[in-house]
Image 1 (cartoon, helix red, strand yellow):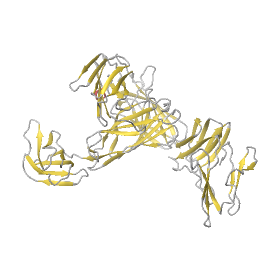
Image 2 (image 1 turned 90 degrees about the vertical axis):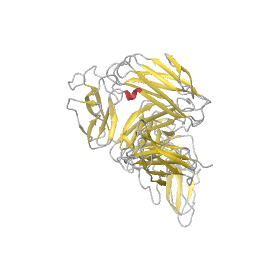
Image 3 (image 1 turned 90 degrees about the horizontal axis):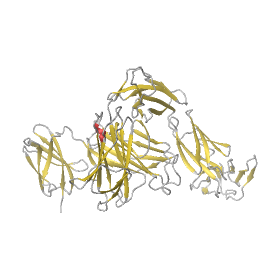
Image 4 (image 1 turned 45 degrees about the horizontal axis):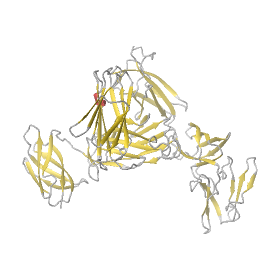
Length: 621
């Protein structure tokens, strides 16, 4: 251990029943006894000794385990102003604790080495977090030699940091996708590089090409089959369908000649604001992009903002402004023609009205029209749904819909939109941000869509885990730039088709700034109600609703006679059946006088075997 943080290792001698000694290394091979520390004494019968930064102040403290009924002791080191670095490793291909790994750190031209071991002496085990004294050095280079054989190198890492280094999955593997316009299976100058193409390696490792057509992923040593999204692209060429990773250097698989199934324009609109704080100014960042191959002509953007949003101005003026039937503000911009991959961005400035109440749901919509044909009109519309808050947790997870009651009930057909917000509340800008979100088992990770982010990102998936990486984000700290210190990622997913009634979908995310410890967000969850064989053309309605003593239930189908109900079941919020009735009637009377106040879920069966669902509120005064 380096007690005085001066780049060289010092020595502590534990002498069981005798006096203990701490020797400081003066850097030329000579060790000098340090008499200023209390550990230079006979403090008990001690063999086992361990070192760790117990009080997290940047220097190493000592824990002594004694025997013979002597007390175990903790000694905190007298600190100095020298810099330091702490590194904890998390293995992926290697063992999780990275036992057997070697870490080298270069400071002031000196390489220091630490080994991760499972024991460091009789009755003692040092912390797996390795400590390096840096003297007056500000930035260092790091090399990690993982037990798997992978070598990880980092440059210019800042001083006085607690780092968590996760073992990369292995070799960086990349390829480039392009539009093979002339069909010669080779990339030629002028051919368009394709962004947003999903590639799958093996069964469950996926990545997406960026704006330069490049897809990157880290792979461990094995063979992988490579496939691309054939719902959107095809190829007439013989492309590389397999890759074998044998070593830790990078691999370039090659160019992928693809032909989009649709070669028209494809307009896409997204909009985001970090948070809606009652009474505070905010802004929407609106991005309009043409993802298609042909030019989109006469593009028009419309923003519809509810009464809780008080519009101020925009980065460039709108063409038309009007009020809707519910006092919503409707703004229209006539944009220029957009060529392939062209982005048109604008900022809309507004204030959240004081008339808006805390926890109000604000729903703003944005839509595009064009005179050109469009490959996919689903992404011509975007809806931003947020809750009005008074303040915000700087690193949290939000979800919409919220679900009903304390159990957050949702239907199995509901889509879930997750938003992960992050803020750099440290004292220095963050070079990069990592986010890991392991989606619940009942969610279909392949259905991920409508991804919106505050900054440029890379997405890879492994099973149900989503890895969002924001490289070179240079996110300022909140003390120097409060607004700029915020960011977020938002996406929408479907539930799986085989989800079971009563399944709970729980989710939380991990956020990492640079190599610091991961921040764990809050958890959000939903309880699923499965509407099996539900006739979507019919609605189960109640009157009165809310009810106190009784309510009448009937099925309403537009332009049809109400079907006869022969069976009805009432369920509490925890899924327990609390009431049932059988009767052949178009209108069935329910006696709810024995039920306590609350929200109940009701299923009705017609004589034809169709199933209808509804909700009944019971109120007792």
